[in-house]
Image (tube, rainbow, N blue to C red; front, side, top):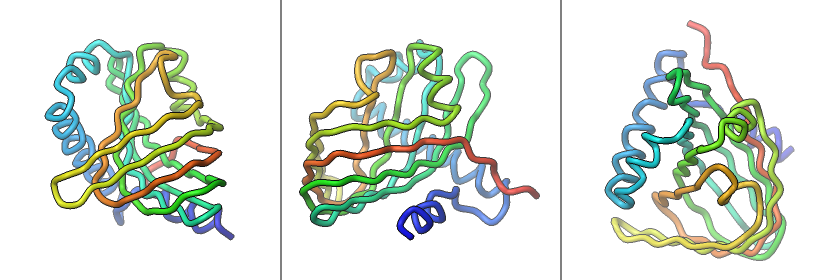
Length: 181
């Protein structure tokens, strides 16, 4: 039942493909503006990258179980091609909280980028803490998984929420088609 509910939540908002594309474009513009303000060096990092992905994720964690879903886009810097994405996440472990985050993954390795946009599964274990109230926020974490200094870097913008977790989880990112007009 939980995977079915999450699957529905992972679609790109909008009644038409045009509205969905506009929603994603606004997400990219807002996220990159926030990222460049928080970490100015990422502007050059993205310019040199083979591609990057911007996501919008909602994550909820109650003791022993957590889940998340989201949507976004991966942009190939060489061709300009956009691959629309959905994300599903399931965690098991201690912790609590709910938060809204916008991860940006910057790829420096073409093979890693292709793996990501073709549909990737990732298993990880780690600890995270994040909080944001109004304009004040902080996040931190440590863990193991597919994201790190392995051909790409991860930058996280926390929009709202509070969480503290120690979990093992599975993350699924997969391409999705926008609605037909």
